[in-house]
Structures are given as C-alpha cells and as structure tokens.
Image (cartoon, rainbow, N blue to C red; front, side, top):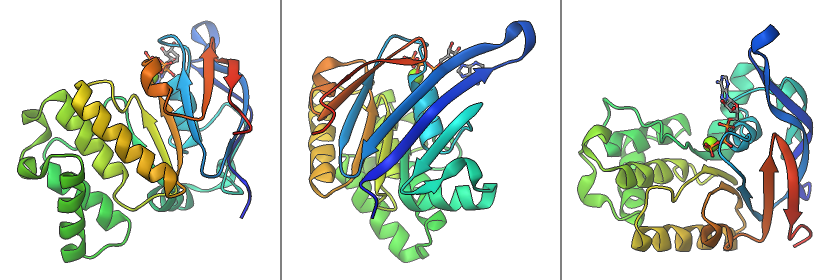
Length: 230
Ligand SMILES: Nc1ncnc2c1ncn2[C@@H]1O[C@H](COP(=O)(O)OP(=O)(O)OP(=O)(O)O)[C@@H](O)[C@H]1O
Ligand SMILES: [Mg+2]
C-alpha cells in the first residue's frame, strides 16, 4: 500500500473563460499521508472547498494531477470515478447536499445502497450511524425540518456510511454548538485512531488544533504547511 493516500501535483483550477476567467487554485502540490489528519484553513473565497472537491474527484482540475491511493483520478472515466468515490471517500459538503425529499434515514440508506449494502443491512447501519451523531429520534424527518447543525450531523453520518478510507469534510463543525462539536471531534478522533485519512476544512483554530498538520491556503496557493512529517 502506498504511504501517500492523496497526492495533488501542481493543480490549478480556473472558473469561467475569457475576461471572466478567475483562478480558484494557482498551482497547489500536496501529499497527504495514509492515516493522517490534515486541517485546511484560510480566508473565505481562497480555494479551500475547490481543493477539497478536486481531492475527492467531485471536480476536475484545469491542469495538474490528482492521485488517490495510487490511482490517477484525472484519468478515470465517470463510472470508475463514481465507483472510487462511493467505495473510498466520505464527503461532507459545506452546504450539506442532503436530498430534500428523503428523510434523514433515507439519505443515509441511499449512500449505503450505492455502496452495495442490502435493504435490511442498510436500515440497521443507517440507524446506528444516526445514533452515533445523536439523531436517532430524527430519523423520519426531512432535512428541511431539521436545524442547520442537525443537517450537518446527518451529512457526517452519510459520509461514514460505507466506512470509507478517506474522509473529506468541508466545515463539518461550522453549524454545531460546543457539545455537538466535541462529540463530532471525538468521533473523528476514533476514526483517525482506526487509521482513516481525514482532510478537514475549518475556520475554527480550536477545531484545526485536533489535526496533526495544518495547511493554510491563500489566493489559491499553499501559504503555510505546519506539522508535516507527523
Ligand atoms: N462553480 C464555480 N463557478 C465559478 N466560480 C467559482 C465556483 N466555485 C468557486 N468559485 C470561485 O472560486 C473561488 C474559491 O472558492 P472556494 O469555494 O474554493 O472558497 P473557500 O476557500 O472554500 O471559501 P469559504 O471559506 O467561504 O467556504 C471563489 O472566488 C469562488 O467565487
Ligand atoms: Mg468553502
């Protein structure tokens, strides 16, 4: 198994074209070790979410390469890419991205079906995941009737559905009160101890302090990389 789980090589991302072209990422190279926990910080609009989405194969770079567990994502076709994502990556979006016409429970079950679980197994595992984020009693609620923090916790439970090797989390604690934040950090600590690779974008220095390594992104570039080699 390669020691490097995620390798980003000279990645750029330009949105728009002509006069309107704007670079969200301007040449980023980054290696994330297997089993490490990395926090990404930086000002709003400076490319953190873009970087995370490219790491997870949800978006393609304008130039440069992305390797995930030894495979080059930029060379995979859409079906292979979707398969890799469902199998190996748990993604928590900044905007949650829950399906609004499905209940909390069904949002998680759907991810489990994509991961190949049968109906009964999926139901039991989805309930236990909801329990692990303190939302068992909200299983039948639609996302629109949940608070922001509750939706965020459903999104975290969904990301954990298929027991992914890699967790990519965009502001996973942004909407949580301090008790829920502490619970989530404990959950992440356990997952890290079990060998999962975690990349977490956050604006909160105390939350970032739980990671081993901190990367600061500014103007689409890495401004600081602290704790690498841990
Ligand atoms: N789909 C898109 N189309 C055009 N521009 C985009 C798109 N997504 C992001 N951008 C632009 O790319 C830049 C980086 O955005 P990004 O979402 O990566 O920032 P961020 O660091 O995550 O910010 P925040 O802390 O506010 O979440 C911004 O200027 C944004 O407007
Ligand atoms: Mg963002």
